[in-house]
Length: 311
Image (cartoon, rainbow, N blue to C red; front, side):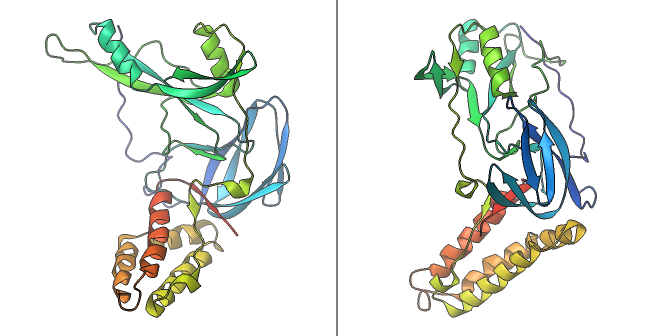
């Protein structure tokens, strides 16, 4: 049915940090709604037209987003394997839809099986009534939407290609397939479904959260008094001081300090700090639990450019 063509990834691309030293990041702030919105990044007031967006330059470091009388503190940083990302201040719905491309010699039965792998139940409103629909689709509405979390091949301004091309040397009787994913704004996704044969009046629930309810990619607060091992408490206090000092830095100073705090040497030092406490000095493992929160968070934020810090 379709042939496949791949393009080799360039090892050192502008979306990756590590090929060169950088001190800032340009990212898109999207407004898919039908109305103009106003927001503030730090002290900069921005107006974003309806169904449009703006490119904004962030210095590495701490920033504050204020929208709709709500504020969010976040960090912009280098990412080891960083990918495309954008900011969704309105917490609007976006959809990642999967299409299976295959060679023409695949049977319809096998193609249907492949297509079923991405099927998920999606809450939907049909003719004013709440319902569920099964689609090869993931719904996302986070403030920071990162391709590292939910990968897509084509952004909201790129159509699905009619076909893909690749020179294939397949054994006789075999076939080839590839999943491709496209990111949609909600209004475009509804149009896509209608063009695909959906006749009912459909929409999706809009349920934005308060910014302080954000749970994805959050640097944790640690209660030092809960750590019962004195040596572990001292180490954790110093570690947190290092990270909180990082949050006061900007640009290149932030990048170099962040890279040190997340280096292999720093990770090894954190791991070795477990030896500071033992079952006698910390029978409930309070230090290990606190350290795990920090190391899990560091691992979680490694490959994304944005993470949230809470007061």
